[in-house]
Image (cartoon, rainbow, N blue to C red; front, top):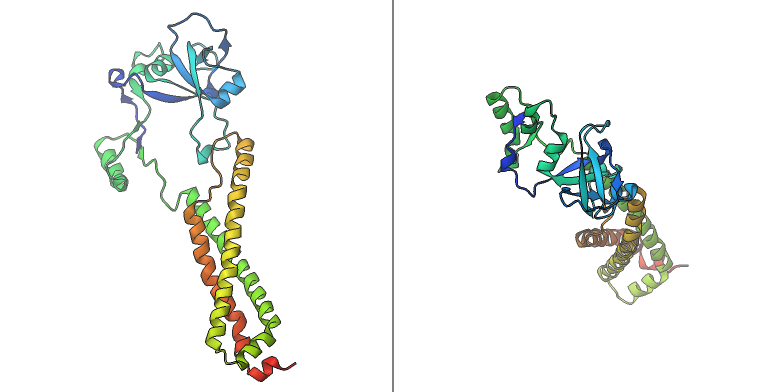
Length: 296
């Protein structure tokens, strides 16, 4: 839950190790030759910023909170980190720096406004039960007029990833329908090729139920082998696809991941489809008279 009103902040209550993210796209930064300056506060810079600005651990950089550089400070690069992958920002260049909260306050505070050091623009409130967010917003607004409160999590219908998930389900359904049609055509061709063999087995006294069971087992085997082949192909190309897109967008985000649950679900869906395709393809053949089957 985020509240968007100016509220007092108590720097004394902030732990010294508190870390915030400072976007370097709004800062002026330059590296200096390392020198004996042990008083410079430490910061962490993102891998993308370090690569673009040619920074390394131990370098001194000057960060400013405005384009003119009127409020700036010198920091020492303590290390380089990989930004947490964010699916909502995977196309953005993560030029960021992390610093301790007191250092950030000193950097962005307006000297002409003493109250700027004790003010924040938003506060995140974590609820014990996230489901109470809808009821918490009007209660907070009624108690404190002027506060703009809104949930930080999206509703299921408004979540863009929910739309993407439905799109993937639709693609999967079309793929399964096409695969089932291909399997059915394959089983029909195999049934016609073995028409005389089926007729001879019928003359020898093999029942239709036994033949249908044999065809069903064959359909399951073909469908399972196809599913296993697809799973192995997905596992083999998973790393390649991830490396291509990670290099394209310069991110550590994992774009494709084949989990055991997905593999098991594929096999469980393929098996019934194989049974249905096998029985449907052989039903017309087994329903004929024995003499019509063996007749040339």
